[in-house]
Length: 282
Image (tube, rainbow, N blue to C red; front, side, top):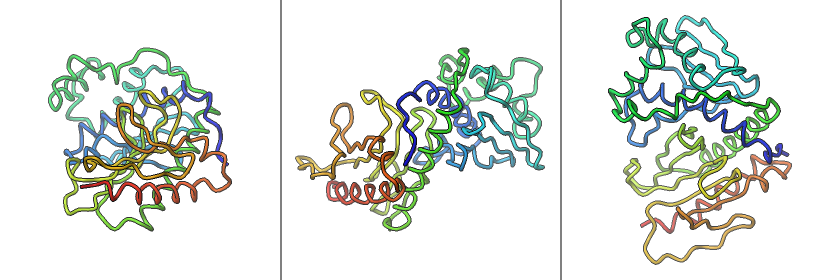
């Protein structure tokens, strides 16, 4: 069984604010991917990671011990506690470490490191110069340790189930299963055809802690594009069709958490969702 997440919302939102900092660093330092995976962080045992960046550094967000770990190319590590940080001050602390190597050519002056990074980001994405609330929050990060560890257990378990499904079932091209900064959702795309871009026909399978109109964690899947005048196939309960804002399959996390083998259940449900959605692609 997996832990309940009924009262973890504030903690998950705080973790999202920390994770999006890693997402923006990846966006700045990595080349564009047709499926925007440069915005996604890697799922690791205790949270998420920037993965190894071009200069050899790595930034990890540890949900279990509520800290950020900055690893330099020479193996030196610095730990930054999430306690008593705002999103902006946490970003400044991370940048101070990356300034030593990874961002040495970017953070060159004696001014505010966050403002310098915003200016650098705005070269790639001009709108960041005026709209950067997503990475400069000044409210304290309120994180409950028990809730953070519960979400880590949930995320890694569901990631494992999705990975098992992909390994045993999928023959086509796929993207890595990554956690995107904007919505904090775990997502992977599966392409049955020869083309593997976001515009090509694909099936998306993932896990979201919440979204517009859905205030609970859920496993999801959808096909894009779908044939006109399709008939929605039946789904295994308690999964259901969601049709407000976007059309796809939703399986509440509570159904996953209640089982003794959640990874196996997620693997099985992903297989059934994939089988249901595949015929709907044009």
